[in-house]
Image 1 (cartoon, rainbow, N blue to C red):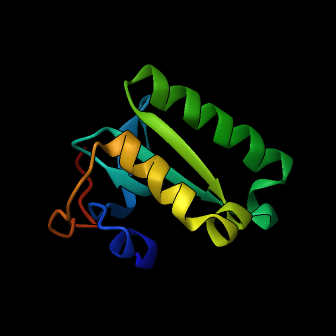
Image 2: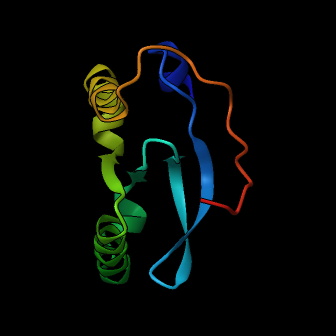
Length: 108
Protein backbone atom coordinates (compact mmCIF):
# COMPACT_ATOMS: atom_id res chain seq x y z
CA UNK A 1 0.00 0.00 0.00
CA UNK A 2 2.99 2.31 0.47
CA UNK A 3 3.53 2.41 -3.30
CA UNK A 4 -0.18 3.06 -3.93
CA UNK A 5 -0.32 5.87 -1.38
CA UNK A 6 3.03 7.42 -2.40
CA UNK A 7 1.83 7.75 -5.99
CA UNK A 8 -1.69 8.95 -5.18
CA UNK A 9 -3.40 5.91 -6.69
CA UNK A 10 -6.80 4.62 -5.64
CA UNK A 11 -6.60 1.95 -2.96
CA UNK A 12 -7.50 -1.55 -4.12
CA UNK A 13 -9.38 -4.31 -2.36
CA UNK A 14 -6.61 -6.56 -0.95
CA UNK A 15 -6.78 -10.35 -1.14
CA UNK A 16 -10.24 -9.95 -2.63
CA UNK A 17 -12.53 -12.84 -3.49
CA UNK A 18 -13.95 -12.65 -6.99
CA UNK A 19 -16.46 -14.99 -8.61
CA UNK A 20 -15.04 -15.96 -11.99
CA UNK A 21 -15.44 -18.94 -14.27
CA UNK A 22 -17.86 -20.69 -11.91
CA UNK A 23 -15.54 -20.45 -8.90
CA UNK A 24 -14.11 -17.94 -6.45
CA UNK A 25 -10.54 -16.80 -6.87
CA UNK A 26 -8.51 -14.62 -4.53
CA UNK A 27 -6.87 -11.64 -6.21
CA UNK A 28 -3.95 -9.80 -4.58
CA UNK A 29 -5.17 -6.31 -5.53
CA UNK A 30 -8.54 -5.60 -7.09
CA UNK A 31 -10.05 -2.38 -8.41
CA UNK A 32 -13.65 -3.39 -9.05
CA UNK A 33 -14.90 -0.22 -10.74
CA UNK A 34 -12.02 -0.28 -13.22
CA UNK A 35 -12.18 -4.09 -13.57
CA UNK A 36 -8.45 -4.43 -12.91
CA UNK A 37 -6.69 -7.19 -10.99
CA UNK A 38 -3.03 -6.88 -10.04
CA UNK A 39 -1.10 -9.94 -8.95
CA UNK A 40 2.21 -9.74 -7.09
CA UNK A 41 4.27 -12.68 -8.28
CA UNK A 42 7.15 -13.94 -6.19
CA UNK A 43 9.37 -16.59 -7.77
CA UNK A 44 9.17 -18.87 -4.72
CA UNK A 45 5.44 -19.50 -5.22
CA UNK A 46 4.65 -18.64 -8.82
CA UNK A 47 7.58 -20.44 -10.48
CA UNK A 48 6.30 -23.89 -9.50
CA UNK A 49 4.59 -25.66 -12.38
CA UNK A 50 1.18 -25.98 -10.68
CA UNK A 51 1.11 -22.30 -9.71
CA UNK A 52 2.34 -21.27 -13.16
CA UNK A 53 -0.50 -23.19 -14.83
CA UNK A 54 -3.10 -22.00 -12.32
CA UNK A 55 -2.02 -18.36 -12.82
CA UNK A 56 -2.42 -18.61 -16.59
CA UNK A 57 -5.86 -20.22 -16.27
CA UNK A 58 -6.99 -17.48 -13.90
CA UNK A 59 -5.66 -14.75 -16.22
CA UNK A 60 -7.53 -16.30 -19.15
CA UNK A 61 -10.78 -16.57 -17.17
CA UNK A 62 -10.48 -12.98 -15.95
CA UNK A 63 -9.88 -11.74 -19.49
CA UNK A 64 -12.91 -13.60 -20.85
CA UNK A 65 -15.02 -12.09 -18.06
CA UNK A 66 -13.91 -8.57 -19.00
CA UNK A 67 -11.16 -8.02 -16.40
CA UNK A 68 -7.63 -6.78 -17.06
CA UNK A 69 -4.80 -8.49 -15.19
CA UNK A 70 -1.47 -6.86 -14.40
CA UNK A 71 1.23 -9.15 -13.06
CA UNK A 72 4.15 -7.57 -11.22
CA UNK A 73 7.21 -9.48 -10.08
CA UNK A 74 8.91 -8.77 -6.76
CA UNK A 75 12.00 -7.56 -8.64
CA UNK A 76 9.94 -5.10 -10.73
CA UNK A 77 8.16 -3.90 -7.60
CA UNK A 78 11.48 -3.29 -5.81
CA UNK A 79 13.56 -1.88 -8.68
CA UNK A 80 10.96 0.03 -10.73
CA UNK A 81 8.24 1.25 -8.35
CA UNK A 82 7.67 4.42 -10.36
CA UNK A 83 7.17 2.47 -13.59
CA UNK A 84 4.79 0.06 -11.85
CA UNK A 85 2.81 3.03 -10.47
CA UNK A 86 2.74 4.70 -13.90
CA UNK A 87 1.38 1.51 -15.48
CA UNK A 88 -1.26 1.19 -12.78
CA UNK A 89 -2.24 4.83 -13.26
CA UNK A 90 -2.64 4.29 -17.00
CA UNK A 91 -4.81 1.21 -16.48
CA UNK A 92 -6.88 2.83 -13.75
CA UNK A 93 -7.25 6.24 -15.35
CA UNK A 94 -6.45 7.50 -11.83
CA UNK A 95 -5.44 10.98 -10.80
CA UNK A 96 -6.38 11.09 -7.11
CA UNK A 97 -7.02 8.96 -4.05
CA UNK A 98 -10.24 7.03 -3.65
CA UNK A 99 -11.54 5.94 -0.24
CA UNK A 100 -10.08 2.70 1.14
CA UNK A 101 -11.81 -0.41 -0.12
CA UNK A 102 -13.44 -3.11 1.96
CA UNK A 103 -10.85 -5.87 1.57
CA UNK A 104 -13.16 -8.62 2.78
CA UNK A 105 -16.13 -8.07 0.50
CA UNK A 106 -16.98 -11.29 -1.42
CA UNK A 107 -18.93 -9.39 -4.05
CA UNK A 108 -17.55 -8.22 -7.43
